[in-house]
Image (cartoon, rainbow, N blue to C red; front, side, top):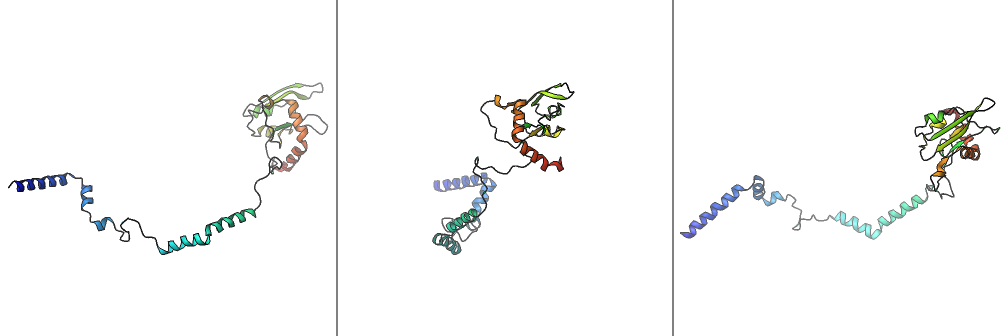
Length: 214
C-alpha cells in the first residue's frame, strides 16, 4: 500500500513539473527525433559526407599543383605590365602644369619686378599667410618693400595666383623644399624672387600651356 501511494505521489509531482515548463521547452521535448534532424544524409557525428566531386577537385589541386601554377601565371602577367613605381629621388614622375608647389615672385624679362603692390593676394588669402608692405617710388610706381609668406600657414589653394593681375605671385613646380626649422619656412621677398629666377623657365611654360583656361 505504501508503494502504491509513493508511486502515485511521484506521478503527480512529475505532472506538475511538466505543467510548469514553458511552452517552447515542452514543444522541443515532444518533437520527434526525425523532425528535429531533417537531414537524413548526416551521420552519427552530425557531419555531412564529402561528395566524390569535392574529393576529386581537392586531389587534382594537390597532385597537379593548380594553385601554384595559377600564382606563377599571375606573377608573369604582372611582370609584363608597365612599371607603376619610380626610383625616387633619382627619377621624378609627371607633374601637371597646374601643380601648386613652392611660391615664387616673378620678374619681367627686363629684370623689373612684376608685383604692383595691389595687395589682392594678401586680401584673398584664406589662411592670412601673406604680409605685404609697399611704397611709392619717384617714378610714381608702387613697389613692395616687404613681401612675406608664412609657408606653415599656406594651404596651397592657388587663390593668390588667380587674383594677381600681372602673374607676379605663382606657385611653381618645386615640391622638394622640406626644412629642419620653422624659420626656414618663413619666406621673405628675396627668397621668393630667387625662387622665381630659378624656376622662371618652367613657370612661363606652364602658364603658356594654360592660357586658354585662365
